[in-house]
Image 1: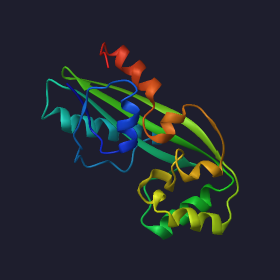
Image 2: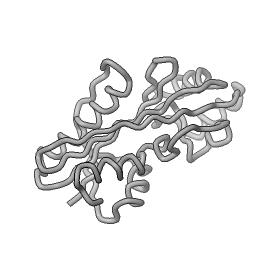
Image 3: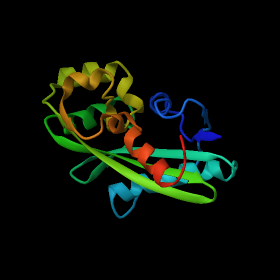
Image 4: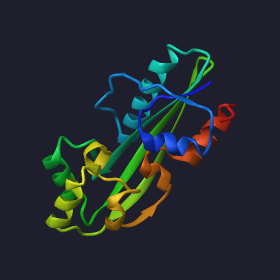
Length: 185
């Protein structure tokens, strides 16, 4: 049995590209807030999510993921409301940032990890454009306050790297991690 330790509908949709037969069990693991680097932080939180579900399902293959947005070394998680989302987007406007997803697969008592980094380049956004986008509600539950696959598409000048990583689950990297672990998804 394969278990995705995430309630994200975007992750569900992306995992279906690799694996039709899986179940979802949302992890209640307490995430860490600090680590030696953003990449280590994302991987550590993915491990915590997967491990908490694997402890209750030792015979399953459990996949955990954690996605963060990083601008100039500062980590942007989910916004704290409308004002927080508008401030995040204003800071991202006209700049390059990184989206990092940490991955963890728990299987057979072992944990396999990887991380994917994608560069995202935002064009300039006016205050009105930011306000109107935030008013849709879409940014309020997203790291960095935007959805590449949603309304933010019109603001993204270009990306370097895996687009599925920006959506929340780097499909290629997950497939390669599973192969390296000897797991067929």
